[in-house]
Image 1: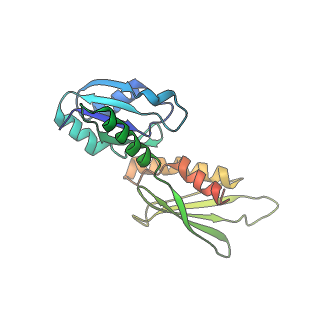
Image 2: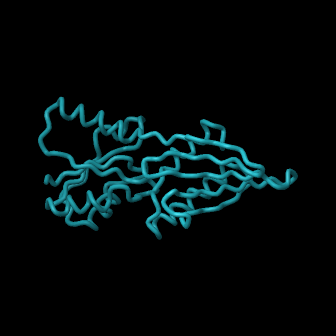
Length: 200
């Protein structure tokens, strides 16, 4: 196995040192560098991480793919050392397809006191229930998020608007994911999907 890894879906605030710290948990890191497309405003930045040994690279691939760094789930893939120009272009296209994995609202239905949205995400199915404010004079929107992986993976938050309630849910879910191993959803993509159907 090669020692070089390609890291995509990085947060815009990710730094070389934060990436190095993250990957150092899996072994010695020889080099970290941002991919050339970092300054192009066409999605999250990417980086290359070269581990000292193939075993460390394998461990990093296994442990860190899907883990959250600076609020975003990492996409870690093996990067062969020697690629032709055509291979590099093909790999970039494949990576762009992987990063563009669409989070889509596949079902939505109205119940008496809420709207329920089913979303297909790369890491699993997410159900969002948006509860209507019980008092129109003092509106408070409540959103419940639930994963299909376990009924226990549930977050329930309320705020003055649906958008703020979703942000509260996203923050609480990230804590849940860190503590319990719940799936790491891309909450920015979830928000975009919900905005597309006017759910927030």
